[in-house]
Each structure stands twice: as structure tokens, then as C-alpha cells.
Image (cartoon, rainbow, N blue to C red; front, side, top):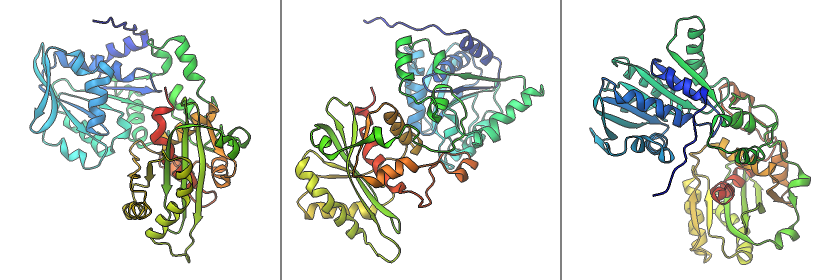
Length: 439
């Protein structure tokens, strides 16, 4: 057996957990690695232990998110808190965990909440308590249904954790800000809110904290959101750490590099541009390099079929396969099935059947992809070949969309003012390699 060293709770965390025992709505908001999930789990487990009701709900954007953050939680989830007196199983065909508590057997049902249809999946049941992890990633109808499904509880308690979004996000305007207004008027005394940051996480050493902070540009929205845990407005340039001088690298320097991993990303346009990016991670996983790119602006009058797109990409790729025979995966836009099929056919026709053509997984969201690029740029680990002029133009000029910000979301402007398709294809090639770049 190995010994686990547990970090202590600070006073803010203790006070939040104590207030949870009386409050009906408990919200832990703040930056990444702030301990919000664990604090809520400790408080929720204490409430479940003696709760008079049998059924309870654990939810997230998807069932897998709920299970990862609530059931497992890196070894601190429900299955570990109730080790020896719990079992994972099914309840009316729904995934659940059964827990033997002081107040009798409790059943925690897991549910996804990211789609509007998920609200219907929890109808017909009354829950004593509920925990929604990453609550502001869920659909508004689902969150409201959770509120309704707990109304008959004999000791109503709802727990939520969330990372900050735009101040105009629906979760704030429709739910959280309203609850805070009621509390300020003295009409909602059993509402419990606390803001946590990485500084509250006592398990992180000073050396680890300094190392983490060094990866962020302190003027970026990522520092404000991830570290300070603020609801940050997105405005101005996106890639604040980008400069041509620090990012551009010559073809000669690239030729002298050795790459441990390589991938290709393709974004196919209709009347917009088609862009493909060849990306490598250097041996030692020190740098990510956009080695070369293909950019073609179709235009309305230049009719391009999926087969022509595929032939164009393979024509560009073949010379690079001779230089880097280890290339084996092409990540293409998940929305374009016809192009992926055409690309597979063209690769087989040209003797490259060993290549995998994969639909790029967009489930993490564009914000995560942008954050990865900005972080690597800030660290000086992001390089783009100097002859990839369109890519340099895109990173230099990318800005946030005011229209989407008004709706509470961070989205890049996509109006043709800069070659945004280059950013999409670059991300398709880079993001799957992130596991080699982040320790």
C-alpha cells in the first residue's frame, strides 16, 4: 500500500461546505484547478448520507462528463468516498450508483444535459438532491428541468460547479445573477455562492503554481478566466502572444528538425477557401511546427466538387509523404462526410491506403483549441513556416465576434476579412497532438 498525502482545506472552502448543509442552491464558480468539483463532492456526500429521499441526480454536459467528474473525479469521486458500501449498476435502464447510507440506500442516477432533448430524460422522477457539474455547459431547458425535478424534495439541495463564461451567458442572466439579486434583497437567504481560484487549491505547491502561471500571458482572457476565474469579456485580438518575429521559422530550420508526431488537418470550403495544414511535434515534445500548408480560394464561379478537393489535397500531400513517411492521419471537418469519403477514395487510388481519414472531434469546443494555441505561442513553443503567409495573416488578424459576444459566446469573426480557414485546418492538425505538448 502507498500513502496518500491529503492537502488541507482552507477556511473559504470549509465555510462553503458548512453553508451547503443548509442552503438549497450551492454554486462553486471560478478558475481551473480551483478544487470546485471536490469541494462540492464533499458537501454533497455529507448531505446524501442522511437525506430522507432515495433518488438523487448527477449530471453534466454528457453522461461521460458526469461520471468522470462526479463518480470518479481523479480518485475522489462518489465511488471512492463511499468505497465498500456502493456499487455501480442500472436503475430503470439508467446508469447509476447505489450507496448504503446512514439514512438507508440511496440511488444516484447519471444523466447528460448538453442537448435540449436531455431534459425529457429526467422527467417522471423526483430527486432529493442534484449535482450538475460544468452547469453552464448544459442546455438551459435541462438546467430548468433539474430545478423542477427537485421541487418535491423533503430537503431540496442543488449543487453546481462551473468555469466562467462571458458575462452575458444565459446561465448568468437567467439563473445565477437572478438568484444573487434575490439574496441581496433578503429574499433568498439559503443561496450559497463562492468563487474559487487555483490559489485556493492547497494541493498545488508554490513551485507548481509558479510553473503554471508562467504558461499564461497575463493580459489574455485565458489568464483572467482560467487563473483569476473571472467572467471575461472577449474583445480585440485573439492571439495576443503572436508576433511574426517570434513565431516564423524558415524552411531550412524545419528541414533540420526531427519530428516525433505528425498530422494533417483539412478544412474544406464551399465558396470559401479550402485549407490544409501539415503539423509536427518535435522530438522531445518541445515545439509544435506548422511545416507547410495548402490554401485555395474557390470563389462562386469556380465549381469544385468533393473529388476535386480531394485530388488537390493529395497532390499537395504526396511530396511531403516522401519526406515524412510517418505521416498517417488526416483530420478533416466532421461536418463534411462527402469530402472524407472522396479523400479516402483518392488516397487508395494513389497508393496511400494506409492513411486514416478521421472526422475531427469538435466536442471540446473552439475555445479550448484557441486556448491551446495561445498558450503555446506565449511559451515560445509554437512555430509557423515563414512561407505560410496566409497562416501568419490569420494569427495576426483574428479577432472576437461582437455579435456572438452579445449572445454570451466567444467566437472568432468569420467575415472574410482574414483567412480564418487556415486557423481551422491548423487546429484540426494540432489539437489531436495536445497530449504530447501538455505535461
